[in-house]
Length: 314
Image (cartoon, rainbow, N blue to C red):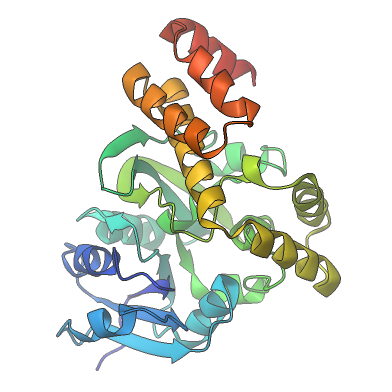
């Protein structure tokens, strides 16, 4: 088989609920010269069987023991056949022109090493929540952002593989922010941008291992902030992060984080007081002693104009 122009890199861990839709959205792209490289990171559900049910020669599967998303992505980078790599997750959805538009941009702008896009965010059922609005789009705007601000939505990026390898790939100790750490190294390799167009649907999913940072402990946020400023994470710090994540990897915390996030998005990004209250009510049922639920419920009674002002200030 000839070398494809793009490798779509998808790590998957216990993704049986959504991976079929994710794979189909890649196979249905208007741009067809790609391989879909799936790294099955030790799934214990039917993820592998679902992948193997697709009969398309562009799909390539690598199975490994569970090592975490950063390690899975690094394995994928080292095995990718194409010079350009499109990141994508097993619970998200590519819109049909995604690969075509990003490939056209990088092909016609050889000094760029990465382009991201806007994204529409959906809930676990695929229902629309809001459309993202990046804080920066041009290379100049992105370089002027504070280090604490992540400039890209990870699952929307298309980047040049060798530039990412030269930047050191994903830090396996940066649990939960391996992408954020990489971007600050990658912008030293070339220009970057976000396309002001929605080309991916990102799914908020309570089953995900990633939760809203607002629910992380003070120690987690302290380690993360220090790592982003110094550019790496030590093994000791990585073990601390992993310990915190393991303690928070419970059904109630992941659901609480999910309902909290949806409530905030329905208040500040897509003003829908009914849905905001529905989600704050679920949050309060799970965590009746947590102040956040009551604060969000109270905010749902305020007018949209006031909430948008509060959101800009914070």
